[in-house]
Image (cartoon, rainbow, N blue to C red):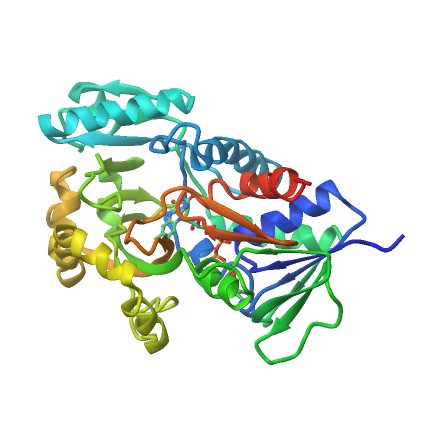
Length: 402
Ligand SMILES: Cc1cc2nc3c(=O)[nH]c(=O)nc-3n(C[C@H](O)[C@H](O)[C@H](O)COP(=O)(O)OP(=O)(O)OC[C@H]3O[C@@H](n4cnc5c(N)ncnc54)[C@H](O)[C@@H]3O)c2cc1C
């Protein structure tokens, strides 16, 4: 009998996790990962906050809620089995005023519905025991929220794929997937078609996922609209002012979480990320402006509807983009002793955020099928936490549907 052949497009943490899961569940198949860069995990998977989210915010019953909880378990075990650092530093979501209390309570109720272990609401005294320099009138404490390096996890998974007989083709940008009967051809950007066809393809191409889907004949929407997130690393001498992760209560008028303190697994303490439209899907240092990317979002009616609906959010975020001191001031509302802290900018992350044509941001993970092709169309945060659970879901549920 011929071996079944599977292709994965994209060597970020999701594509790699899917390749690994296929090799675990079906050791006799052939698996090829196509990655356009010279190494794996060069995009979102190595430009994020490194938080293993516990599942606080997500709509109970949705894919994010379910796959995040399962993902935590899988990531934690994977780190333990592979000697990858994993620090359960804990997280507090802090209310600064009475107005935020009902929203804090709503997050607490979602966390309970999502069966997040150990979460509790605490007052200012307990908050000071956990984070001695943090102020707030009430907080939600999630003791098992953790930090890791997703880049490191992705590189370990890549090695495991190799050990299990899979192939990772680097420097191989895929232009489109062509359905031919019950086979799929992979056409590279060079114009060549890959040497053999595949029985199944799973496209996990992050910031390029809508383009690859569209070029392969799938729906054009939702479209990826890139939002960058800037981080600042705080001065070594001040990093002990924060012990773990300090987050604001999300404001429903703003589509992203708001600037927060994030401890890193390498010991650094960062402030960020903010969220602002990126002038290029891969424009990490601000110099990689892409006219094609700008033209695409400018021509997308959804973008303008989103922009009109979010004027106050845009102004708030723009202030943090234009002024380092406004950025720090936002965070210092929670830790006043850091109001004048020195910072250095760190590399941005760019979110592959799907947007509908009515201007709404797609909240849940979106995984769709087009014949024998499976597309991940939306996997924003907690996409890295959930990666191994997304892989299980794709291999054991989505692809096994008759
Ligand atoms: C600022 C920021 C902070 C975040 N913080 C967190 C967090 O704390 N916790 C969390 O769980 N999640 C977080 N996330 C989300 C998380 O990083 C992503 O959900 C996750 O990394 C997505 O992985 P991926 O493999 O789908 O995408 P990516 O990592 O972007 O990988 C996609 C890969 O596909 C390749 N590719 C694209 N197009 C092609 C093509 N045509 N041919 C071949 N290869 C192609 C790319 O080169 C890339 O390697 C954050 C994201 C950002 C941006």
